[in-house]
Length: 337
Image 1 (tube, one colour):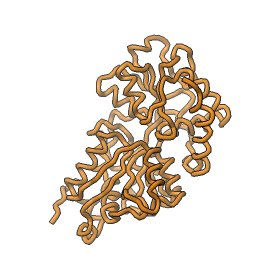
Image 2 (image 1 turned 45 degrees about the vertical axis):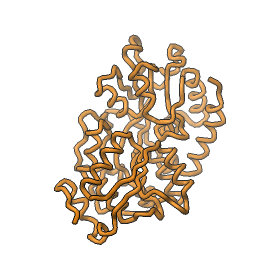
Image 3 (image 1 turned 180 degrees about the vertical axis):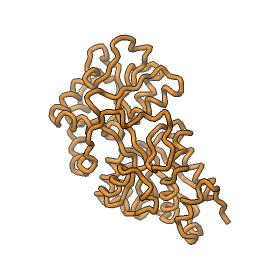
Image 4 (image 1 turned 120 degrees about the horizontal axis):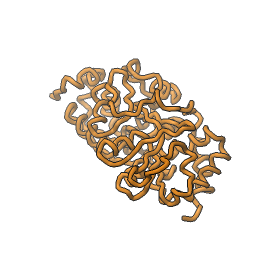
């Protein structure tokens, strides 16, 4: 007989008792930070008794794995990571429709993500794109705009992830296209390339490098820069003056996964206020999607940031996302360093 804490009782009671009788294991593909992945998995196991087999990979890597496993899926739930590849997975029939009873409690942007995908994914948090710089390395004329990152003083002193592996970096690519137009965006990225020392695999890695002084600037989601500053690093977080895009971090059920009952139990639990508040305990400062969940005070205030009207349906489509990544490979990825 499983016992559930009062914290999770409401969300867990949404599933019929028969589901718990059949649910013993969950295979979780996790695309947030390692610490948050572990904390979330451990909390779920404590509350349900369901063992979680968790693998942590970036959004692009997870999409590629789910695509490779099509027809013989090994995973049950894809939790976290930017919404664009979740939408592509939905479009390509890799994930399945599910409408949680907790949808009514979610922020409009989280529900919009579900509606756009035909309810094959849902928003679990939001975060704005920006960058952070090391204030001990950048002591004069601090950058405030995207254009400032083209300055020659930053030659080989900026890091950003590769958009093929990183949802963060794909969000940057899509943001630039929406801000500037496609040809102008690729011209900007080609200029920026001279200042890039490394295209990392993980979206958060650039700000960790800035925190240790390995690089001056890391282009990341702003909450990742905030996390480094909260941890004591000399990082200043920047919301670029021209405007910026944002992510709707998402969750999807993998079509045909081996443990469907456990997957739906996780899905409902992960949308509950208590489950969404675990992120802050793991030093993740995104804005949660459940309107009843407490937003971490350290989280960047989206209302104060000049956000573009990010077209999730277009940039999460298989055609557009694949075409942009192919163009990045052909025009930016091949440039010498």
